[in-house]
Image 1: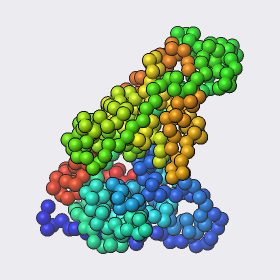
Image 2: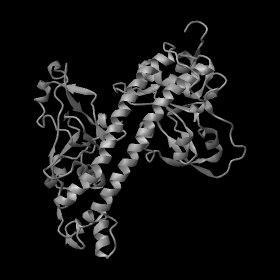
Image 3: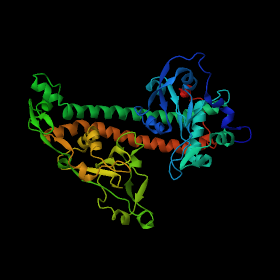
Image 4: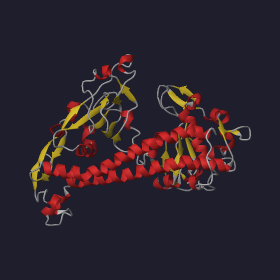
Length: 450
């Protein structure tokens, strides 16, 4: 936008690393949550349980407590070969702090940036850091140390130049990008609620057997008569323990066709160049906000597909990551081939893929107990098929699917919408942060810092 708009280095608008003064008197240890770089993506998906808890000396912890508007920058990450460089950032909101219990500090491999508000708006500074990361410039500040990629923060803070326009323009840019993030977050929360409802129904019908238990005790099962009539009023002994009368104790292999995948040679261009078939790896599932796969990072050609014995799996297949780590789950909303890091679970006739999805989630401990391996844990197809699974009668299975299908379709719609909004936001980000694209101030408020 010309010389009237200054470019500033990060060090110009960050307040001395972000640490405040120490507590004047040391007291007892303080229970805190500790955000690591590896927590950034789960937090973005609304998953906070993996953020660890520890006790810190209160005097030390008070200096590191995060505030709304702080920015965390990851300064140590994976190997240089990783497709995801270090240098990721996380914006700390009051909602995040509340979700984590209030007392939150950064791990040692995260650098806290507390923005001087007289120079820049925190949310604007965060988007500037996001643009730096997404553009690939983060690679310029990486340094290898024993195979680990470290982010040279001091060099970055002094050298990286950020366009810092007037306050009104910063607020407008943060407002535009923030509006996309808010809509994406709203969709995520809605899908999270829908998923929780679906999970609760599976738990009630197929784990706790609430309708059967209620009828056995002479209570109202709380279901419409047409559904209540589908459930028996007594239990029977089985190898799975006490299960509803007339239901079958079985194995997951009785309910689904279990298959695996592979990776055709990446050195053979004819397998990959111009590929039109989706080819999934567990990496495609890691960032999902809902257990729904609607696209993959890589595609494979007909020649490459012919090298995979499981071929192109149909829409509706449940995918379970079978190694490093075990347990990522998604339903494919696209035909897709898979690599060797998956177990594909295709429902047999009369079986709901949503039943299989929530069964796999509920059976996580059983799945892990059958995994083995010297380098990393992996569960094989032969060890997976015999895992115990209850087999409800066909009318119950159909009723379950009919009850959950509208919730699932809404989740799919939310996922598609979020991907579209994310694409637009990512397209706008570099153009707004560089000043190439101007925005009007009047419709954007100052709420974006929280």
